Length: 422
Image 1 (cartoon, rainbow, N blue to C red):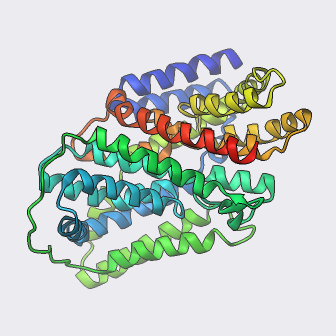
Image 2 (image 1 turned 90 degrees about the vertical axis):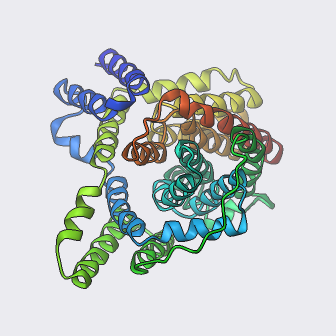
């Protein structure tokens, strides 16, 4: 079973990179093979899917659809143009802002909320939106490690080490992960300046686009506020965030339908949800659950530890950079969950504080997803948005942005975590 799972796993990710137009079909086929082969039992297939992520994604897609219809993204882009008429600067500022939002809100939700603004700016300048949207996605992934609520991996690490929200800002009297991530974000600025060096145009300062409906904006802001508040609830149900996004979307949709006195709007919005992306994510959850069940993730963990050779620095280096490589293809949630107890044991055997290895693991596992277009849910969501706009995101196009961005941010985090906590 392990050999079959490994072959299917390697094949599916190769095909996901080589056949971007058929990613959902490829992932669905792999998931079906895992179920038919008994790697993922039929009775456990539904529980293997992260419904919280899917509900959150679907609900936010609906809210964002209403947000776009209200003309608010165009209004925001007009405001940005008045402040920063230079296109390159606009893209960089929008990317950094996306990262800041993502430190407190789920990465996927951040991409869905800010992508419409990036699309509006791209249309005004008549440039491809691929670069700006992908930059928003990778920046969102970077900031997932900044706070306790930024990403599931941060939540896992916080639970393992007994950290609270403030520990990500100040830990053991030293700057916490929030500041390490912000340093990484600053280092990515010259990277983005180089990547978008050809966007030298300026945008004309035009009249502000009139907003036809403010309710979707309140829905988005309410979603953000509710997600932040929910992060402080102890022992909340697993689907809390997903339920928040869906409930706010459905409540807002009902209000919009009542105001418009018809059901045509509801049908258009429901049809506008990107079901292909949802299917792709659901299938990948099944694939990752399958390789976890046969022990492949545990095997990877043991290999990483073995390569350390008894040296804390070498072990730390292996943990960071192999986590980057592994998370480019493996969902970082089960990987992080499997590795946390492993690095704790290694730290104990070396007589070292586990903090340096745990923070190194968080740095590598969270940012590694930026290496490939299927390495993180936010990347998949960004690809879905661009596909609906008529753009296909190839592996090469994504890696042109993701690889230098990841290397700059991880290298910064790698050095700072070692200096602060070794």
